[in-house]
Image (cartoon, helix red, strand yellow):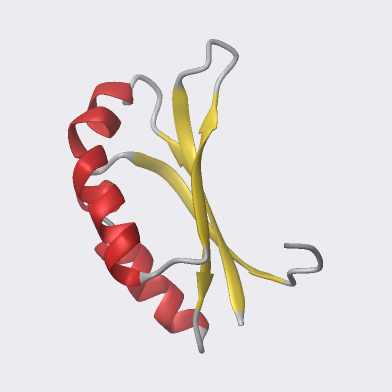
Length: 89
């Protein structure tokens, strides 16, 4: 099943994101996520994340989220996991 991880960064946390970006991208690649990319604010700066996970349970998605280097660095103000049905792509 697909799960969308929708995360919003804490205000003023761009430097935390930048400092942990390499570890986050390595984690994405190592865990084989389906799709991923940052949300952008009106200035074009990264301000959150959308990650599409292909997992067997929501608990597996939560474990993935808990081990994300961004989460471990305390970047996110909120993280939501939502079941998602891919129609196109």
